[in-house]
Image 1 (spheres, rainbow, N blue to C red):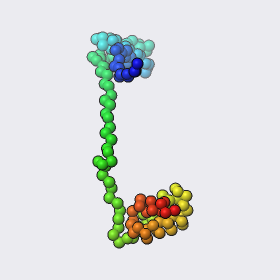
Image 2 (image 1 turned 135 degrees about the vertical axis):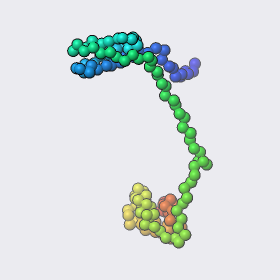
Image 3 (image 1 turned 120 degrees about the horizontal axis):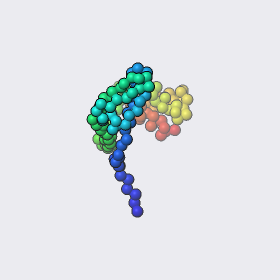
Image 4 (image 1 turned 60 degrees about the horizontal axis):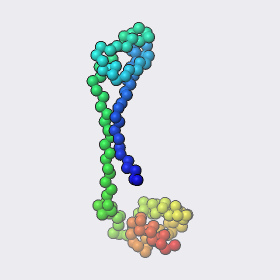
Length: 138
């Protein structure tokens, strides 16, 4: 037998409301049915008389579950690659490539040499292509 899980709503509720005495700040708890009674009053320990505001109703609002849509790879726009027509390796690209290669165990000097070598072969400033070239030509 399969277990089917259903989201159930409550069949009954018991609501208690807290009121604080403005004179001595003592707490007084009332049931919902007491707060619905017209003319209901609380006599505090400090002899203050508190008239709670009459509550007509309390609504329970259920959370709406919004299903997120997942974009397919075709619908995701690809960012244009940074290609420089003059074939100049920018300092930013060199630094980013070196930073990435350091995660693969290259030291800074070796990473600069490998990226410079990759740039001479590919003639592109694209960070992803340069790093891929270095990693595939180890």
